[in-house]
Image (cartoon, rainbow, N blue to C red; front, side):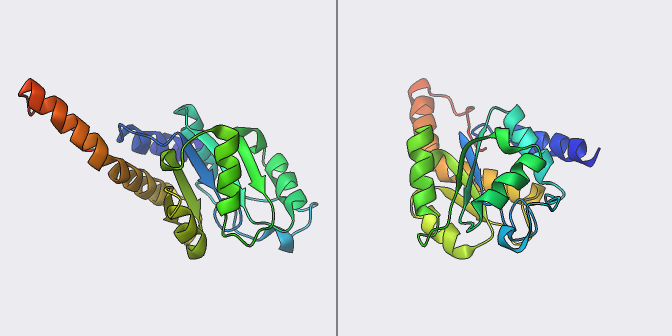
Length: 188
């Protein structure tokens, strides 16, 4: 019941933006769920952060692709948990492996697999170093201190929209000036 309420709120937030990312990428540990996989057993029953599942379903309903970028040293446990939670099939790319590269390798693989440009991606993670490194690739990246939630979704979509507005706004202004009309805008 809570997932459906969150999904509906997320759909409302998504409806506020004319331009959505083509792909939203999530870290796992302390982003989608409140623990490190390597500290758990495959026998455990995992739980997502309270608003995570509703957000995932809302993004899928809007036609946004989803992916995972996780530097977990225990990908077997992560994959087991994704299966147990019934969400594994939601992701078009699942890059779960240990790495020293601050997730840039993960994003290169996601890019090769999906052919979606970095600037059309939105990323949520709980580590500042990953946010910094992935942002330099052109991905709109959002730090989540306490898991993904509706506030983080709104912030991410807003920053994604702002990152695209200078070019889109310029194109829009050129169209408007040719038409001598100032009624068209692309604020969000």
